[in-house]
Length: 223
Image (cartoon, one colour):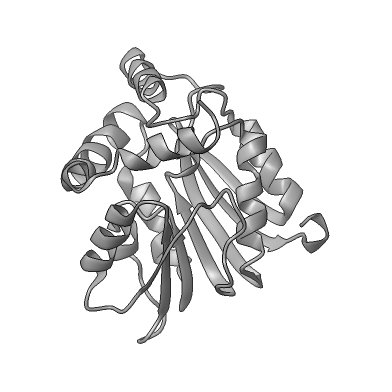
């Protein structure tokens, strides 16, 4: 079911127990073998684009942020997620680096935080309910807390408009059936269109089933 129930299902699956195996299953096996996107490609933007004022949305286990090259000695890092288990695990992983945690729903306007010079949104969109046009309001909410010269980057997994192996397609359908994923309508061209509507500069690349994106210069007149 789309809406709040769908979002809860996609978030609630990440319990402390499942998070303990998440990195091995997703980054060690699923990325290279099923989604055909080496985890190294997902790490690269965190090494290039994370700033001294960074917002990480949909934090998972903190795996990617732990790989980031921070440009300042005392960065300001904010973690934003609906799931308290993800926030707790990521905060612990990044210790002793101080972070601010905010629990919230990215499909709703964000609280008074920021502005941020960089925002990451990796492996969250395919978990959010609705069509890509409905998910697109996430970009409005993030652009509202983003510097004019900041960057938004991330990645998502597609089910439609891609050539997937039988095991990869079967697993995605299983995830969609259980509410873990909600990407049964998602197509690469729809994500690109939503980004280009809201940002003046967009870089988009498909690696296997994964779409990697970078967006800059938010169109303030569209918000």
